[in-house]
Length: 178
Image 1 (tube, rainbow, N blue to C red):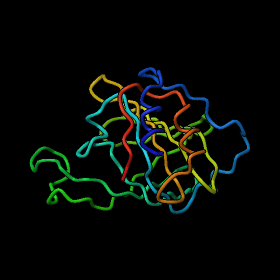
Image 2 (image 1 turned 90 degrees about the horizontal axis):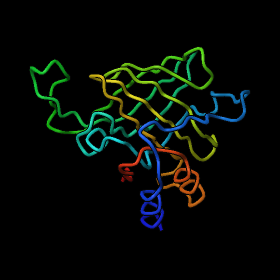
Image 3 (image 1 turned 90 degrees about the vertical axis):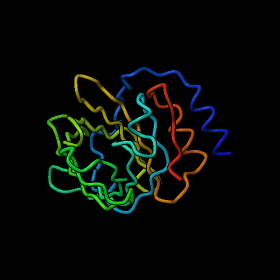
Image 4 (image 1 turned 180 degrees about the horizontal axis):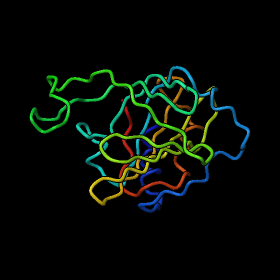
């Protein structure tokens, strides 16, 4: 069933600039998204950034809400060459990484430094089931948009997949994170 939903999701029209509807409840308590999460799916207008060795392919396992920031604890495939000014290659294995996204003046919007300038938007959330983020990455005068789905369980329910697939998102691809 997940493959069918994935196929349907790939047929949706979108634009390089995903629309940010954001959370409808301005009083939502962001602390409710703290805790353990599983990466379920990624969609992007730039396949290279979310494919196996991409710099935006994360496997978040924990989100902590701090004062004026979000901390993302995740695993990332380290593939950069030594001497490139990036992190050294660690046998191509996933290594634990923590990144911090700082709150901006806008509600549910954060800024993060990682392989360029990133604006992170909290799009949709049911704190007991799922959270969806949309990240706009600016690097070398090019914008990459990544929409990320995280679930409290290793696989998302059919209802969560339906919510994810109807969100406006980039055209290229959706990757299941299994």
